Image (cartoon, rainbow, N blue to C red):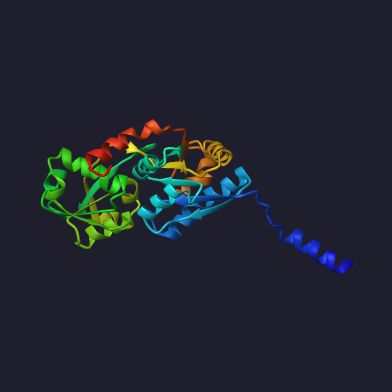
Length: 276
């Protein structure tokens, strides 16, 4: 009996288990492949586990629409999404709130979209896109469709003046342009700059700035959990050593406080694009 107890004690000491008080389900908008997102956001999940005392599980829906539906249903506790999906969820479930807004290197808390073409394309500006085939990310992509549609309207180009296709994810937009499947593409500037084949493409125009991605609650989020997560992420101040350790791999430089009013510009753009 003593021998069994001793072996059990040694196993516990060598392989301790973590006694989590609860689980926080962390939803991520699938703008990139699942494997890549897991690599990018696991350090943040581990940080939140340490700060909250709860196990954090990453949830990556199959597409933007599924993410929106799951967030509205409250299938996860916190989410990280683009500003358009955020305002859609907020419209459907007013009880949800933003916890913090992301800051990215070079753009801080602003989100910008770009129009791209092949390096040797004769196209030089947004005004020349009338009658062209344009690849976008998804109808729910703030800087990969909605912001671009507003920019096209300002350039005098209506939706019916172009042929639209959706690639599903930002890198696929770049591939469509690279491979000749589209004359031009619309995607987030931050993702474009990370493309391995960026040198083969060229930017011919940019969109107006929008609020960046946000961490948010859902209608079923426990208020105590929301408070702990908010307090934890706001410790990750932009351009600090701690933030670099936790979110640099996710392409972020930290988080700052935000309110729902900060997303009013996104609402205006979505209405102008006819999607809100």
